Image 1 (cartoon, protein in one colour):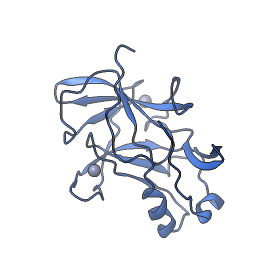
Image 2 (tube, helix red, strand yellow):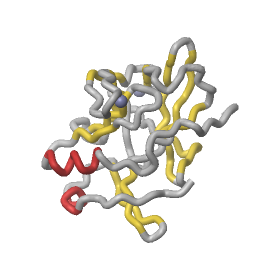
Image 3 (cartoon, helix red, strand yellow):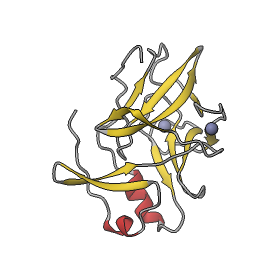
Image 4 (cartoon, helix red, strand yellow):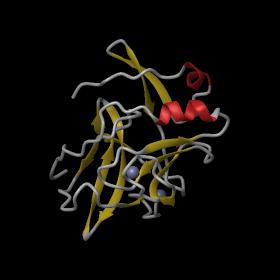
Amino acid sequence: MKLVHNEIPKEFLDVLPEGIKYIARQGKNFLVVEKVCCPKGHSLMVDTVRIHGEPAVKIRVKTGKQEGSFFIDAFWGSHKKLFDFLPEADAAAAVEAFCPECGTSLMVEDQCGEESCGESKHIQLILPGTKNRVLVCGRLGCPGHRLDIQKVPGGVIQKISGINFFGSQIDDYFGGI
Ligand SMILES: [Zn+2]
Ligand SMILES: [Zn+2]
């Protein structure tokens, strides 16, 4: 899968929050989530599953009667989600996410900004320092995601949250991890 590049606002690079790094690939610059935790401080990064060569974010999820793990691409704007089970639910289904280590819910109330979504639950990934976080829409096939970061002007956040590298896709399964 090819990485599609989007311009990263320069203002953001000056105030890059802890837990998000800036890397160069194929001569282009990308934002990559480097460290996110559950509300109790357990790291959600896994080195054993890498997407685009970077450690993925691992969470436990329930959707309908199924339960399994999600591995989320750490590249900002990618919505690549890999599963260790084959979801029966369609892309419009909502998921509930938990910390794989302690089982604490990662769900928070937040309205999705994507047109035709309207989901009110989001998966919260906490960046170091506890005040900053990444919010990912709780609906299976929705590309909605945003940064909730202190000390960054609202307009810059909007630009960053609008970055979509690949569009929405949940077509990549891998079984039997
Ligand atoms: Zn935990
Ligand atoms: Zn959504």
